[in-house]
Image (cartoon, rainbow, N blue to C red; front, side):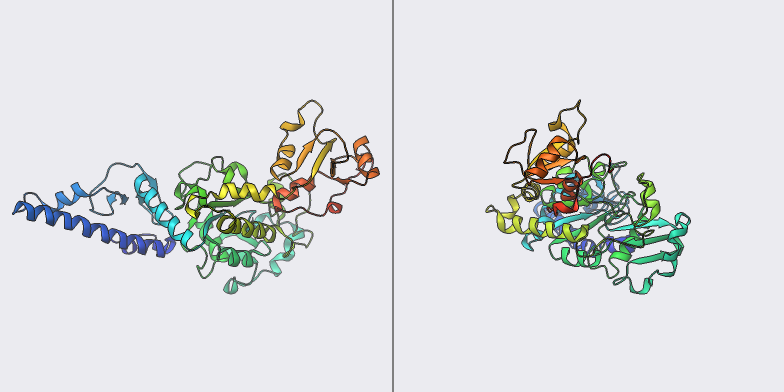
Length: 423
């Protein structure tokens, strides 16, 4: 049985992985045949049917359309993990998944690579149904790029899907540079057809993802994403996604992305009562946007993983490296909050306080000369006025949120605080 030849969805499969798997299947078949021959020789004559003996010796590491990929035995047991994004009908036993992860991870580490799992919508691109395009966005229909040259373009009309898609600024360079450091996967809550079309826009030459495109149709968890179908150890995987709730079991692997809202329908989807980038005839910055900043962070994480820690790469955990890099973003900053949290709650329990600490800042409820920043929603409070008098930074809470998304400390003057009357 050949997975490459027999797969009904060969076009969406990972050719490289399928070839390796075919080679492994052939190797194991040879081992089983040799064991059968040895058993027959030792007994002088064959005591039982070759096929039965092969099936007895086979460990059944996986199934394809409910048949063992090694010996061909019909298997009723549906334990293990489905790998539909590689081949429809393919399932691996848990032991085989672990073996494949170990093998794949060793190869990647030898190449000084980690694994990067990328969300699509609001992370790498933004799509809108044509019927949801507002009158202020109609001009876009005259600016769409050719689908014949997607490698250099960014705005596409997908008539056959009744959809328009805008790639996030810097995405082409991001993928090109990230591919040198990571083996990359797409993982989306969109369906398989949508995932495949978006992959064609992002990777028309199949240089970056090959068949590593996972949709909601391929996942094993309902309304969640999981690393159980990614062929790599969690200790070597980084995730970029705009939705933390999608990864309840892998938050330590996650870099939370600022959502890309190019179309008006995207803003409305998340309850924002404001004009979208397209309605403003604007876009994110190429040089200073989310993807450019997160690429810098990824390079720092990669460098620290392979060069910054003394232990062998196989024993390292990228999640620990991510925490260390993240703690350096606001290192040396001491923050005091005013008019940010409700008066009836403990400030230390609030997400923004915890976020600042995770970014390396020290948070306090008392003013003294060691305080570097006062974080405020109202420039008229006593603590805000103290910051101005003592020549300390007075910043809006969005300064911390921006640092969290971009993994860098941004200029404080870009986050001014107004008085309540000015607001």
